[in-house]
Image (cartoon, rainbow, N blue to C red; front, side):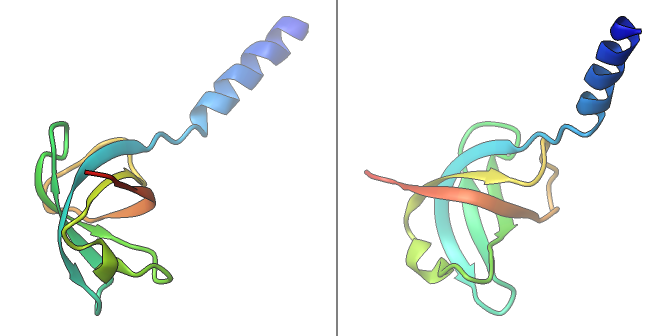
Length: 93
């Protein structure tokens, strides 16, 4: 019974695990009407210019021209799909 319970808990916890993707890039532009950032992402699955949605309470205009490290709400990245930025940090140059 204990063995079944442990296996069930492991399988149950894995089924609800959500992975997020950690990226870095330079913010090229900010669009206040849609609250989107245009970011030139470095190496990785999202490399190239991508658009990301920023939280409404954050000032995206202050990020233009800055390099940022950020986490998106997905474990993968597809071209022309917009992902939400969950956390970010400005990188000192």
